[in-house]
Length: 172
Length: 300
Ligand code: SF4
Ligand code: SF4
Image 1 (spheres, rainbow over the protein chains, first blue to last red):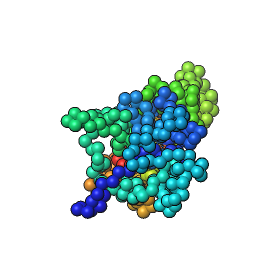
Image 2 (cartoon, rainbow over the protein chains, first blue to last red; image 1 turned 90 degrees about the vertical axis):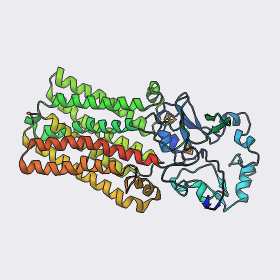
Image 3 (tube, chains in turn purple, cyan; image 1 turned 60 degrees about the vertical axis):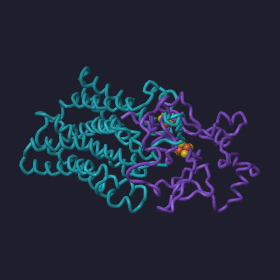
Image 4 (cartoon, rainbow over the protein chains, first blue to last red; image 1 turned 60 degrees about the horizontal axis):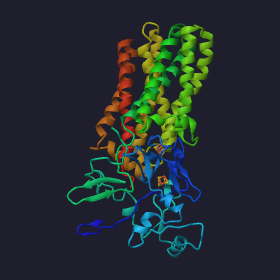
């Protein structure tokens, strides 16, 4: 980001936001996308018919058709690990603890305390879409969170050269 | 999920979001186009049987067949677009009623059933009274069957361009345009020039209103939403779909309007048929461009 030569690289995880009012869940014709009790938007791949409605509905590009299973897939916050009282893999793997995960309904949880301590600096992506995302960003800039701010007319940028099995779903 | 292994480095690229790309391809364009014809001819048959009952008396069965054929094209391409087509039955056994896809699939299935009943009344039972009674209900059902795709497009929260009020108007106009065009071509000797001319008026007015809506979107859309502006840039200037967009507008709307007027002035059926053919071909292009452009914009 920035203007040459004053540029720098930043990294921001842009995964599924587990929206409280999730367009992907609403549009799924077979409830393959569904809420689980803890608020996670989960996917049942056996149920999915691969209509790609969810891919068209998610304003964050967070969901795709897996070219290997031909069904929709996305970050599930490792719902299977949460069910066994483990943290999501990304939380465990990140060396600088950039991902903080927890129960937003519990005011004493790490995530609740973290959000409270950064009042005023907490953002969600595309709030105007009315999706009520459950994924919050502290210190995320417009360029990283708003695709239009870094939009390149010629297309996307980092993974332009990928040619095989791209998770975009189009068999065109 | 592993997506690419770069052999030189053995580096593995793993993505947590999808790449921008076309998710709903041309198969979905055919879906919308064929459905417009399938429901549009039913609207037109209903209209003709009231306004020109004598002319239209022998069109009951042919129109039903055309509707059945195009609704099946619509269903076939819907199925072909699924990545798991053999799981289509899930829609009927695990329906999720907030989804326009579910509602549409159920309504389309009922519609097909009723079309076959119409065919039975007209071809086997030869009972015009029963046909006409049922046709009224089929025509009423054809309205939501036409509109549900607009509902689906507006449920695509990521695609700001597709707004419900406009898309529903566009779906109805597309059905009226395609229905009148098909009936002009199907009418043959049975429909008088007067009846065909009236269909021409429906065609011309549908083209005019649809064109106005597209132009309104093109000019005023970017003033309301940044995202719409970014999407419409693909059909402006030297945008990727600019040429195709204007080809569609001319072939589907402007030329048919002109030819409908010329056919009325010159009392020429051939010019009217040309307008009908152009409208049908152009509608595919228009629908295709509108389907593609919001998908070009990266969401992440
Ligand atoms: S971010 Fe996208 S995929 Fe995730 S819950 Fe929201 S709409 Fe669904
Ligand atoms: S692709 Fe699968 S998960 Fe997505 S809306 Fe269709 S059935 Fe649901």
